[in-house]
Length: 116
Length: 114
Image 1 (cartoon, rainbow over the protein chains, first blue to last red):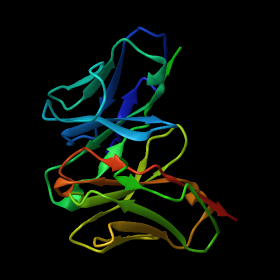
Image 2 (cartoon, one colour):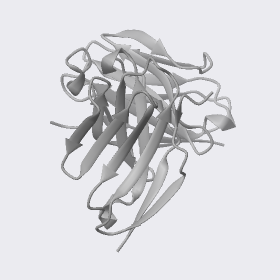
Image 3 (spheres, each protein chain N blue to C red):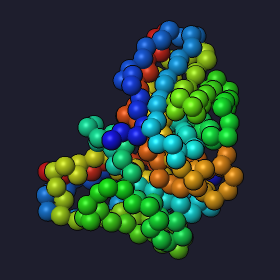
Image 4 (cartoon, helix red, strand yellow):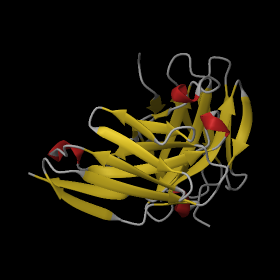
């Protein structure tokens, strides 16, 4: 099975712009989650989508949004970029809903966003 | 309020010896725990998980122990290999893992010396 894929891998934007990141989960996985990794804050949960519905949300401002399509692919959008949004954005997918032994989350390689 | 803590930022061990990485949590609602290995500029790689109905889970060289009363888990790597050198994150979730929301610790950098 192919793993979680994320595009683009690298992105450079300027303050005030907006950006859209894409994630394709492992085939059969219906849960897609997004995380932000920064040196100071570590890995922080942004939100989770399951069957096209956001069912969990982390403590991030409304400039961060996402959506999930019927094929489980997900996009994340950040509007009005700030310098502090520079980070590695990671997407994870999971089977979820089965026995706990199958509830692992698998991560993609991430998108490195630099805001200038 | 950090709900998952990895108090050791770094650990150095000799090749062939045991590596023990520790993790503490505060939220008693957590009932599913995972360990990930991460290299710089890459996504975390899943290693092993454990449900709160167990106190031990093994997979090859990796064993995770869970002490619910102490709210403590540990990852044992035996024997340690130089390729194990990476940052290790523990993560926790509730709902028996039926959620994509994971709370991560700050990570422990493991160095395995040849």
